[in-house]
Image (cartoon, rainbow, N blue to C red; front, side, top):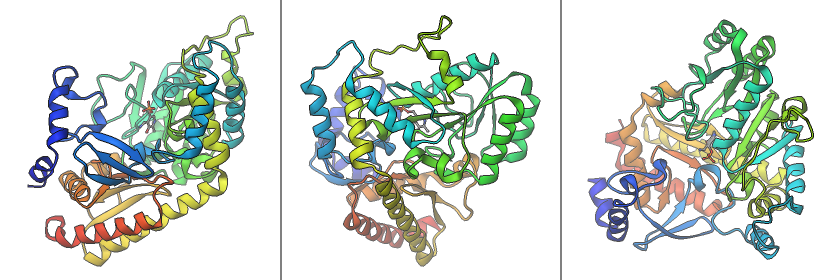
Length: 421
Ligand code: PMP
C-alpha cells in the first residue's frame, strides 16, 4: 500500500527510470540508491532541501551518506570550487592547493604523519591494504562482519563476489575473543586488521572501547598494521573517532565530506609505512591517479576543513545529533514500541526490535520491512532517510528541521504502532 502510494505520486520519476533501463542495468549506476518500485529522480538541492522531478520537496536527513555534510549549496564550497575553476582545470602538475589541504588533514587526525589522496573511499582502503601487505610482506587481512570498506571490499553475511581477492578472514564485530584468537592463529601472515571504529552502513553500531583496545594490542603483538576506516566516522569528533576513543591506528582512511562534497578519498598513517611511496626512493612503490590532486576537490576540501567544519563546529554538530537520537528513543518509549536508534553524534540508524544490536548479524536479524515502511512514510511527510534506516545530519539541517522530523516520527509511531508491535 505504501509502495503504490509512492509510485502514484511520482510519474516523472517512473518515466525517467523506465528510460534508463535500456542503458544501465536496472536503470541504475549506484546500487545503494535503488529501491522498489523505482527510485525517485532529484531535480535540485538547496541547503538541506531536495526537489524531485515530480515537484516533491523533502528535507534530506541522509546527507549523501555523510559526504553531504555541507548541504547541497554551501556558499563557501561554491566559492572554493569557482576559485579552482578560475585557475583552469587539469593542470597536469602539482598545484597550490594540495600541500595546504594535506597539511590541514594531517594536523587534524592523530595517526596521520603522511597522507596521499585518491578519488574515493574505496580506493583509499584498497591502497591502505596494499601498503600494509607491501610493508609487512604478508597477505592475510582480518576484517569484521558488517564492515563496509567500499564497493570492492564489503564484509556482508555471505562472501561478496565483487571483493578484491585478498586472503581475508572475517569475525563478528565487537567480539574481542574471536578477533584476538583469529589474529593470533594467523599471526605469521597477518598484514592488516581493518575496521570502522563505528559500523556505518552496517547499522551505526559503535565499537566498544575494549574491542578497539584489544585490536590495537593484538596488532602490535602480531606486527599487523591496524587500519581505521574513518571514511564516515571522521566527522564524529574534531580528530575522528581515533581521537575520541584514544586508540590510535597505524593507518587511517578518509573520504566523503572531507573533500567538501567533491570526489575524495585519502589514506595515510605512520611515516615509515607511507615512506614506501616516496618517489625519491629507488625502490618506491608508485601510486598514480589522474584525479588524485584535482583542484576542484583540493580547493573545496581546504574550505571544508578551514572555513566550515572547524573543531568547534564538529563538537556542536555532533551534540545536536546526540540530542536528536535521545529524543527519538524517548519517542519510541512514549509510544511503547520496540524501536531503537543507535549511533553516535551526527550519524544514526533505526532498528526495530527489543535489544540494542552489538553487531551486523544482530542488526540484520531485526525487522527489515519496517525500515522500508519508515522510509516511505517519512518521504510522505517530507523527510528523506536512507531506505535501510540511516541518518547522517548535514550542517544545513537546523533546529526547525530537527523539530519537524521529531513531529513526523511522533506521527509515524502513532499511526503504525500496531504494525511495529
Ligand atoms: N568506507 C566506508 C566506511 C564507507 O562508508 C564508504 C562509503 N559508503 C567507503 C569506505 C567507500 O567510499 P566511496 O563510496 O567514496 O568509495
